[in-house]
Image (cartoon, rainbow, N blue to C red; front, side, top):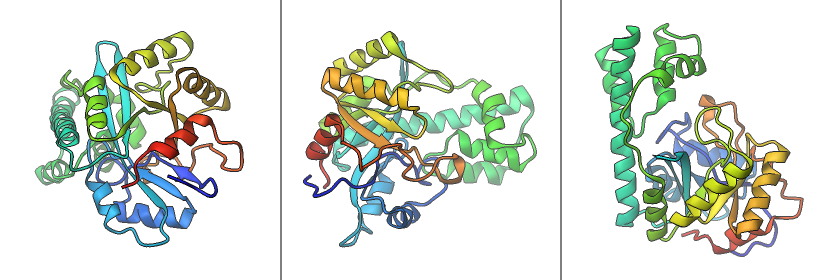
Length: 289
């Protein structure tokens, strides 16, 4: 894409189609109000929200990229893989989305069962039916339900002290599967918040370099260089790695509405400063349509 000037960019946000609190339609309104010039919706294991936003875009609206985020795990660890500019009707994308959704629903049911048997936490049947009827329920949904019924003081406490201790199935979308599905759908696979694989885990230095090279063997094309949770030092390390390996760079907040204390557009990328080469190339190469 050709741009006369660098816009405010936020390429990582979640709606009610996964674990955010704003509907896709509300996300579009908030993006307009925030003056963001380029955005992507990256719901977990879902493309439905992107289709809804695309159907509402009007002349003069911010530029929009189809986005998605897959939670992946293999024998080496846990990874969050973002996909951008893919064809949402591609059977390759649909296949990974359907697998991710199936595994997500199985884990939700397993977590509810474990909370009941291990801690004695139970919920009315109508609450369970409502939860399981959501597009892609996640840990924040269970956490908010626990707060509602007095089992925890906050969603964060519920996740930290109970939900993360609930045993669930070991099957995940593997990083190679997610990357291949994105590539075969015409998209660009990007590693989300690279140092943060799971929870408070922080991967830096030699281990970060090794992990990145391993994912590149699967076809990874980029990494998130600007992120709401990065310090300037972490961002500088990510940009250095992108330069070292010729990777694309993206910029995202990981906005979840009320489920996370992150501001829409809060990526720490300053559009008045020099644009990193990896971000410039990403904007040139990614597909808007």
